Image (tube, rainbow, N blue to C red; front, side, top):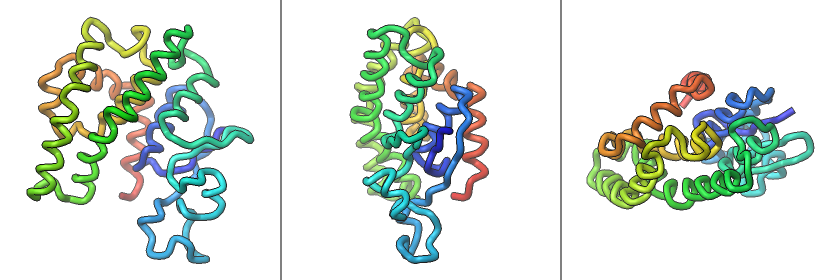
Length: 219
């Protein structure tokens, strides 16, 4: 059975959404971020990202990670490409060209988008959005995202989805990375194709199921 290690209020949300899309039976093992604990290595500490048993699965000590049978893997966006490929269906590439496009857009999400989107969500997580430094960080991230989001807007011109005119792992991966900046509504309001696309992605039953569980989880 597929086992997903993490909590829903983390990057593991991407993998939980993918598992829901694929209809794959999975086991969820909550792993608390070590930074949330005073002494993550204490004998009575809950299972966390510094627990030796978890580090054996992901030596980086970060969530999420998965085990699929005897196969262990980390890096949330790569995990989704693997799951789509293994379990088949429309979320995977149907041709080498589609597979290449899924990899390209996933890499785009990880290297071009997320370094900036994560700055925004962390500013809100630490309740700094109204401070001078927080506002400067958000403004800088939004400026850096202008060209990448314009590229996505153009890619979606005349298309409902990123690859193959159907919802794929590329859409899921990019949508989850962009969820971090949905607080900045101007980024989407000025790009109607992108705004309609993310609403389309987040209207899916699997996304709603993931979010429902995520919202029940303690912050």
